[in-house]
Length: 288
Image 1 (cartoon, rainbow, N blue to C red):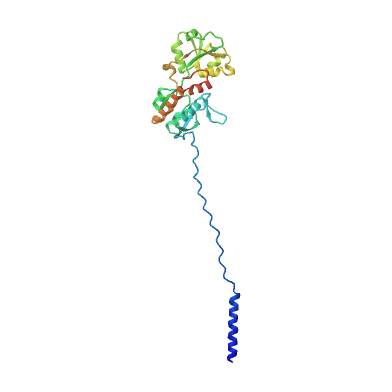
Image 2 (image 1 turned 120 degrees about the vertical axis):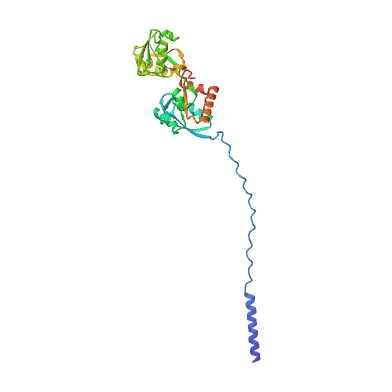
């Protein structure tokens, strides 16, 4: 009996040893891949080149009638254009303003300015005492003198005295009529018409010998087919008492700094030749 128990114990110990020998050895965890070196941070981007243009300091709106070519009119896109609008664009660049241009009816210009619907009027607006009382005005930016127009070859290319005893057409109740009354009332036959256009038609029909009026307006008519008969004659007439001091921009009286900046821009343009170039683009004679 003792021998049997010893044999069983021996067999059990042999099985345990065999199991221990066949059990797989514990595996080591896989080695981690070597850490990669961190990439150096990219250098900060360099700022782009500065714009050569100074950003606008403020915004303003400029109004015109757009119905008096080539001073102001509407182009094919319906936008204000012309001599005055080019002057305004140049002035806006000089005073560093972003400008918007709008077109309104003539009767809406001064009330709209006073009601602060826009900031500047540039629409061939003559300087008058009444306008000085209602708003602030810039320095003059153009002056179209008085002038005579007559048939080509007429012997009037000299002083106004050459037109004594001649038939002179004028627009009724105008400043040009006031000058003609003062200068010719007793020495010429003054024919009065409701408009300059009617007086010019009379000239083309040989009903008058000459017409006195605004030089730019007369010259523009002479460039049309109906005006090919005629040409400007004589001397420019400048008389501040009857023909006025010229055309200025309209601003609100309280906008003193804007008016000073605009005046400075106009002055620089006249000094550096910019005004002359724009003038010659539209007219063969000086307007200031």
